[in-house]
Length: 113
Length: 113
Image (cartoon, rainbow over all chains, first blue to last red; front, side):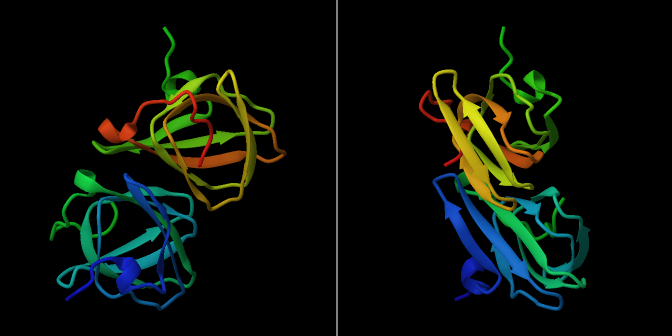
């Protein structure tokens, strides 16, 4: 059975800072060249604490993203794997929404909006 | 009539980055010594993009808070005013929850948890 929770599938990169009934807050850290295995995100807000370049893959499609530090972007519910394609570490905070607000991973959603 | 929305009551400090049906994302900036007038926050996650020291006031009680940069804290629904009591600018991102998740400002809630 596949474990879709990134804190279980990719514990070297994702860890839970805290959670309550409404949100779970994760911190993500990696270094250039590192890859995650496929995992699911609920509807989330991602706040970037570093600049980074990443390639996200749904298995069928790829999405390259470059973000500056200090940005807040919407990550719609999705399943993907990621690769740090830049030359700097990735450091982000993910605010995951819970319950109905978590949404359902759509096969067409890939990367932040 | 009091306008409780900080983007209306304190537009020099709070501005809306974006919003959707589930969240509204605000950016807050000030400099040492600046004060906000009283305003309301729904249940929110605050991500700090700077270190800062602030004094929050409910009108009856005060709460002094010092946070490092890169932290994510829960701000339960509350009404307060704030003062930058440090010697550095404050820079934060606020992820406000909407609908039932927004909660109701409690007279006992003051500052982040």
